[in-house]
Image 1 (cartoon, one colour):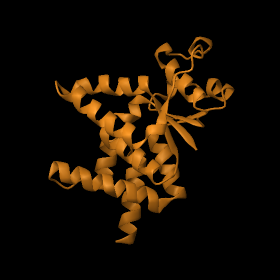
Image 2: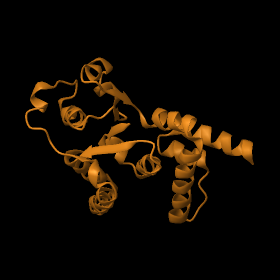
Image 3: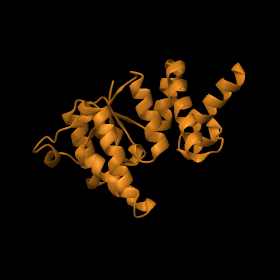
Image 4: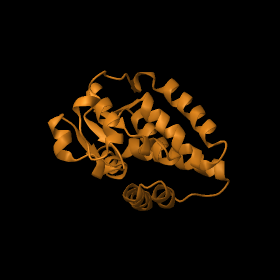
Length: 186
């Protein structure tokens, strides 16, 4: 399955890390455009003076790890498209140009299902998407989440219960499912 990742799911860090580690497990193929990556870098300015520079470093690492994920622009495609928020048309255009199956976004209202279906696309939010993948491939998703949790704990120097970490990352349903599954095995 080919999934176009909107900028809002590439930034914040924990969400992106879980998504890309799951992709690294072979559960889907991630896609994005240069413009989506640029939106991620600009959004990171909120972190302060070094936020954008840090994001650009992370973008370089992500593009090196996923060199085939960058979707080249398709001239003229955007001009025939319509969405409620014209600023999101480039996301739809990238999904169409890459023959994606799905757009993964937090801005679901900006991507009406009827418009996406006309283009052969679906959309989902990261929490439902990852929870669905976990239901089908629990070991792979749990391994990805555990790796992200360990890194969060290493960087912060403090414990991060999985449910709390996933909730902070806007993945509450996944966090609850992981917490329950891990508690049952303990």
